[in-house]
Image (cartoon, rainbow, N blue to C red; front, side):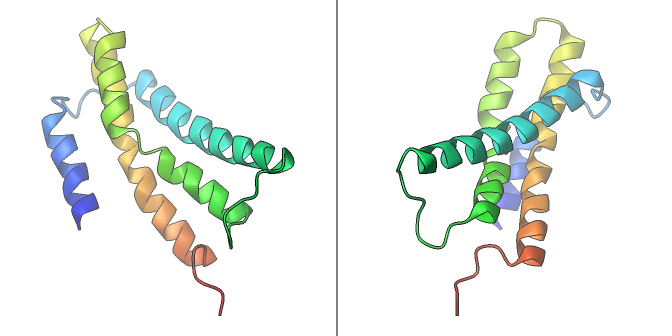
Length: 122
């Protein structure tokens, strides 16, 4: 329940009107999701090729799931957006993209449950 409460706390205190959805919103959201999934998965596989083992019972599905969870960009993305954009309209759109990344957690949980990712081997 803490995760849901934290999301709504960030959503309410971000100071972004719901009308602040635009092209920058989708760019930020896409960048967080695609970039984090590719980055976490790719570099973990690279580390594995270099001889660093993955944790026990961690496979490709768990790596992708870790990337999805890493895509939750609430705090840092909101801070960076505040520092990067001077234009109020772009700032609002960027913050909405960061806030929408919170829904990636819900998607990750649903995918994980359906795929059985993270369940201990019996």
